[in-house]
Length: 443
Image (cartoon, rainbow, N blue to C red; front, side, top):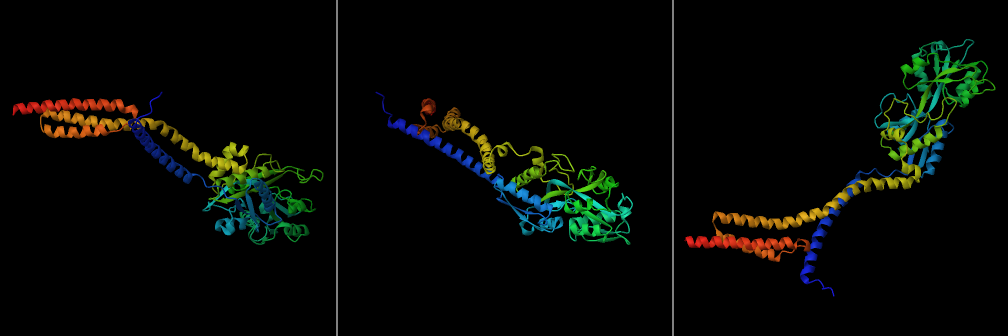
C-alpha cells in the first residue's frame, strides 16, 4: 500500500505551487498588457457606412455610383450617395468635409496641387474632351476656332473650368471670340441650330450630347493635332485614339480616326478613409470599370494615373497586392474579424511561447538563487574567520543562518541542495569553533 504524503511533503508541494503560481501570474500580466497594446494598435473596425458625392442624378457619375452601391451592399457596406452639380462641387464637399462626404468622383485637373487632407484612390475611367464645331473647313487646332461663339460647359461645372483653360491656352479668351457657359444637351442643341459655332464637352462616348452631335449634319468633331502638346503642358490630360467607325459601324461614325485628349474620372477621398473602405471601393471599381470599352482594352482601370493628388497608401497596397487570401475566400465581415484576431494572436503567440518555455528556467534560477544566497553568507563567515576577528559575532550570525535554513521550505527537487547547504553550515561551525578555541588558548 502506498504511503500517504506527510504534512512535510504537502508543505513542500504548497511552496512549490505557490512559487509557480506567482510566475504564472506575472507571465499572464505580461501577456494581458501585450494584448491590450496590440488591441490599441490594431486598425479600427471598418465603418458600416461610406458617404459618396456623385453628380447630377441623370449623369454618368451618379449611374456608376449606383453600381458601386449595389456591389458594396453585397459585402454588408452601405454606400450613401449625395447627388451634386458635378465634379467641382464634389471637390468642394471633400475640401470642407461637407455632408460628411468621405469619397467622390472628381475630374483630373480640378485639383491642380496637393490638397490638405485629400488623397486619390486612382482613376476609374477616361472622360474624353470633345470639341465639335460648325465650319466648311476641317479644323485641327484650337486656335482655328477664333472668332466663334464657343459653349464651354455649364456654369460651375468641371467642363467649364477645363473649357476656359483650353480656350486660354489657344488664345480663344479674347474678342471677337466669345465664351458662353452652356453645357450638356443645351449646348448640343445650340450648336445643332447654329446658335453657337463650337462647343466643348467632357463626356463618355455614349453620352447623349456626343451621340447627337456625331450624327448631326454640318457639325464636325475636331481631330486634335496638338494632342501631344496639350498632354505635355497639362499632365492631367491623356491622348486617346477613337478609331473610324467604332461608335457606329453601320453609319461609319466617326468617319475617320480621331485623336482626342481625355481627362480621367478619379476616386478622391479624405485621407482618414478606412483602409477596408478603400479596398471595397477599388474592388467595386474593378468590377465596374475593369472591362474593355470603345476607348481602351480590358484591365486598364482602376489605375493610379492622376498626378494631381498623392496616392493613398492603402490604394497603393491594393494595386500591388490586391485583396488578401482571407477576403477572397471568406465572407467580408468574417475575413475582417479574422484579420483583426490574427493581428493580435500572432504576435501574442510569438511572445507567449518563449515566455512559457523559459518559465521553468526562471523558476530554477529563482530557487537556486535563494540557496546560493546562503552559500555566499557561509563563505563570507569562513573568510572572516581566517582574519581572526569577532569570532563570537560570526558564531551568532551562523546560529541565525542555521535557524533560517532549518525552517526554509523548498520544493522536493531542491531538497538535496538544501541538505548539502545544512551540512556545509555544520562544517563552517566547526571552523569557527576551532578558531574560537585557538583564540582562547592564545589569551
